[in-house]
Image 1: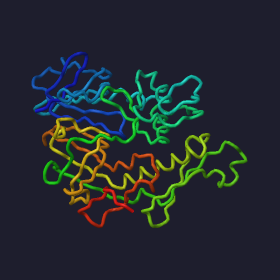
Image 2: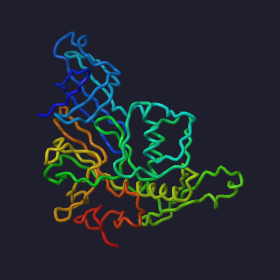
Image 3: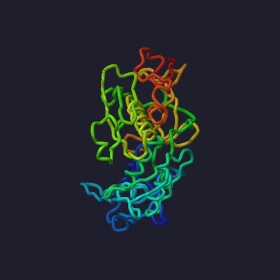
Image 4: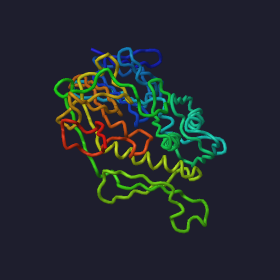
Length: 365
């Protein structure tokens, strides 16, 4: 049986009775909650983990989290003493703490450059193996904003995802192109699964406006409308207006921003939640966020054996408790994270009439 190992101060602790470690491409920072039951009285005095301690978490030999212990909770009951340890990755400082930069203004930097500047005071490195995002001529920090709020905002223009890696550092990436060695098949490796099809968060028309700094530009709103996008699968009129957070970027920024908004909402129109009986795929690799997986879940209108759907893992929770060892995954369409306009996706965004084909497979128009 695989063990979770918590390493603090060079000491490795294992034998946990309850385990949860969660990572995701829309979840930063990664976090864990683990618990154990004391076997002998007096063990709290010898327990070496303290809030604030740097730590690493491994599942067997695989590193999954590098960060800090946030809380240590002691509990007592009629026949046992319990200890729970809660912690998050190093990127918690980007999420919790206010952004710092001399002068409060960053000029001539792309998303990677801005993220690196904001992460540097907290000892966190930032990498972008693909796109570095669009260049921002001038970016002003607002007092009280956290570093991650700013990073997430500038990433929207290049359809970049900002999430932490097992070493605790930040990654800026687009939707992954790596496919897992196996996926999820109804009747084989799926304990429970639910598919949600939703329409309430989608809109027929998206309009992106600038927030003008020119007093005369505030007369009316026609001059402030920079870009539009449409969701062709919404039959009735439903309009969503958004503000381009970088008004000096002009129409190019606004078009990327409004396209990103529409794509993300279409992608969230279907969400699959799966519980499987192990932490790893058929090749022995941990289920990992930003990995494509084939799906054969005809009862949920998602793929078939002859034509599986290929979707993207967005969140993974490795668990162990009284129910055994399981992995809970959230899986969405990869189109939700692509920078291309909706009309170029070459997929339908509605529920299929034929469950055997499966929602999420490409359908030629």
